[in-house]
Every structure is written in C-alpha cells, then in structure tokens.
Amino acid sequence: MAVDLHLHSTASDGTDTPATVVRIAADRALTAIALTDHDTLSGIPEAQVAACELGIDLVPGVELSVDHHGVKIHLLAYFIEPTPGPLQDRLDTLRTGRDVRNVEILRRLRAMGYAITLDDVLAHAKGDAVGRPHIADALVASGAVNDRAQAFRDLLRDGGPAYVERERLTAVQAIGLATASGGVTSIAHPLTINPGDVTLRSIFVELRDAGLAGIEAYYSEHPPHIRAQLADIASELGLVATGGSDYHGAGKPHLQIGVGKGDLVVPDHVLEELRSRRP
Ligand code: AMP
Ligand code: ZN
Ligand code: FE
Ligand code: FE
Image 1 (spheres, rainbow, N blue to C red):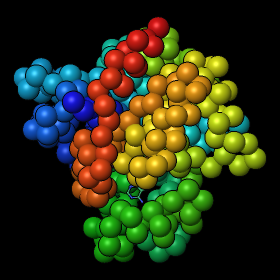
Image 2 (cartoon, helix red, strand yellow):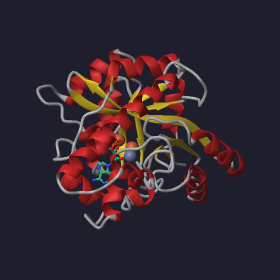
Image 3 (cartoon, rainbow, N blue to C red):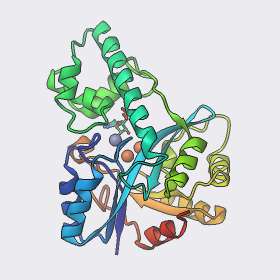
C-alpha cells in the first residue's frame, strides 16, 4: 500500500482543485496523501471533505521555502491544521512577501520588454499563494514562451534575469513554528539543495538537532539509487525517509500522483513513522 506526501493544488501553483487531487489519489488506491501547497492551507478544508467522502486519509500540510545560513531549502510541514496557530499565523506574512516580490518581478520583466500586468498573472491564480509559476502562465498566454519550464529556464529561475528574492523564514524558525503547531517537518527534494561550502549531511544533522523529523528520500525526480541512498542516510541519522511526487497537474506534466514519473513508490509505513514523531 502506498501514499503520496507531496501534492500541490490550485490553492497554490498546481492546476487541479484540491478535490480533484484527492479524487485522483483515491482512484489510484493510495491509502493516504498530504496536500502541501506553498505557503497556504486554504486548500485543506475542500480536500478534507473530499477525502472523507472517498475514504482516503488526508494529512494537512504546507511547503515552505526557508533559508539556512544562505542555503535555500524547501521544508514540508505535516499535521498543520487549517486553524489559527503558530505556523499558521505566519503564512499570511509569507504570502504578502510573495505579493511584494511578484510586483518587483513584473517590473523587471517590463524593463526587458515583457508587458505582463498583475491582472494577467492573477487571471492564472485560483488560490491565495501566487508566485512565479503564475507569472510563467501569463508569459505563456502572451506568447512569449512555450511553457512554464521555458519561462523558468529563460527568465524566472533562481538567479535568472527576472529573479527577485523574497522574505523567508529560517529553517530553524520554521521547524520551531511547525512543532509549536503540533506538526512535523521533512526536507523536500534534498538533491535540489545547493549546500555550497558545507555538506548535505551536515545540514541534515543540524536541522535534525533543531527538531527536523525527516528527509524526502522517495522523490519523483530522484533516480532510484539516490532514493535508496537517502533512505539509508535517513535511517543512519535517525530521520524518517519520507516521499511524494510533487504533483502540480499540468504545471509539471511529467509527474503523476502516487507514481511520479512512473517508478515512484512511497510505502505507507512512512506516514506511521511521521505520525510517531508528532510532538
Ligand atoms: P515561487 O514559489 O514563486 O518561488 O516559485 C517556485 C515554484 O515554481 C517551485 O516551488 C515549483 O513548484 C515551481 N517551478 C520551479 N521550477 C519550475 C519549472 N522549471 N517548471 C515548472 N514549475 C517550476
Ligand atoms: Zn510548486
Ligand atoms: Fe519544492
Ligand atoms: Fe512542491
């Protein structure tokens, strides 16, 4: 029996509604899923209703982009209920930081001759966490690029010509807030981290000592031997090897719910291990 603990919906930059994401997961006979939209829990209530109707376990989650001594890391926080709480209350500020940054990115794009307005961008955003993927969609609609991937490659990628930084929590702050909210955290897609002068392992250890519960070993875009290596490292370090597809619907058309590129399996004991780490 399998689970998928990394899914995006229209609440952030996925293209399927929360209810649709849950329905696809139920059709694939997954036993549990986590909805992990960027900086928002606004998709969770709809997903909870659908999960209840379809008899699948729904873990409320959120994905955060955090800073650890200049290194960018994505953190998945699980068991974060869509109610007021320590982490929940910070999400508003993070989304405001996105709004400020989006305007600045549009300013840069305009200076480069791409006449995209905020209304153009908002026309592609159905939720409250708006970001670069929606700017990419507006660029596609204007005919400037072919797809989200090209928009990132040519303009929006980290350090790209239209890239702008935004407010982030530190990893240690985010882990503390998630724990205070009754949740647990896992480092998303560890191989996308550029650790600079330090090693990935040293980052895992530092954040484990700050309360991190897991690392996302079973990730769509990790080759199978890397998944196994990361699972071994997790077990050596006393961390849970978590996993998920990072499904975004048509936003990342090569990734499917539950199976990623076709070869992903996230065993369901992962979720039990995560649950056992709850504060
Ligand atoms: P933002 O949250 O606004 O900083 O945008 C970053 C998000 O864009 C990532 O978390 C991904 O979900 C998405 N993204 C990044 N690179 C690509 C790409 N090449 N194609 C499609 N989506 C991407
Ligand atoms: Zn995303
Ligand atoms: Fe991510
Ligand atoms: Fe993600």
